[in-house]
Length: 430
Ligand code: PMP
Image (tube, rainbow, N blue to C red; front, side, top):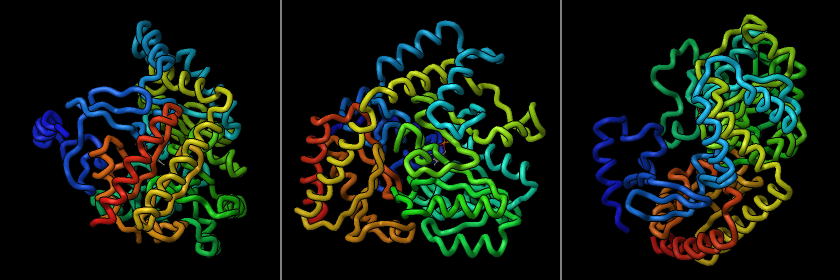
């Protein structure tokens, strides 16, 4: 595989950007080797600057659920763009966006658009603190909520991949206000709330963990968190930046029938443009400036081009059978990966929820963060490279979920599983 142009770009980039990248996991540091530089993308495929083509199971880390460069999204962006890039005064698309989100996720009674998932989660905990007058927040080991100071405590995603779950630069006084719990442990949550429930402003959780690979909630776990928050007056925040519009049209809250007080969104809601959103109970959102005293703002928030891309994507996902097709494609992929691994004698299990999945190098079903970190990351790294050489791009870390799009059809799945049969044999050979 020729990667000369990527190599040349990466060499230049290393001198210009930390790790040569603008976001850590892209550097391929934990899997080894060098990243490829994208030239273009279409449907289920990424094409690099050397002309190599990959079936893409990241989809820009989640946004591209309708496939890359979907014509409807491109058309919406192009026609909106010609009217001006940013106005700094309200525009109609912001209203349509909020109406659309509320229709699809009814708990979003009121909301604010922001520019990233990080901004959404930061704003949501500020609101939880402002509304309750309390300071402590609760998060879960291995969950990632963006790079806000309060969240870089036992964090997942790149922070976990690079062994930096607690980042230097976060003042201890602030980190001390973040309490952490093991995800899926009923007892631990009950005990913490019994001890300090009246000090907890909010609980933030990825309802399905996607930043420590992919871990599903145990039966009744999200409802348990809901009950603890209701009893103690803490605000329950579902971070649906990853799960929103991915595990169901209404997100994880629809899938599990548990209603949070606040939710955060990102990725799909922007269709590939920089967009995030937070919102929920109207009485809470009315406390945001200028309606109320909790401050939050953004020069480019609600940007028309970003709203157009997001709205076009939200339009596509409402098409008949959209999620049923995604669910069955993910099913075929996960079953096929397990069978291929089994045939090669490599212990592998998978988890999945509609268009998101986890692949674990272990022989046991993964239900906790401890299970996820106990997996064989060296075997994963070999598998990652064996797949990449065959033209299939999985996340360059054992601690990231994989994503399918509606552009992943039979042909892409068959190609992927053929590559996997060979790759698992390579892993088995050591
Ligand atoms: N929350 C979750 C659950 C995420 O997965 C991410 C990013 N992967 C974020 C928040 C942060 O979003 P962003 O990278 O857009 O700031």
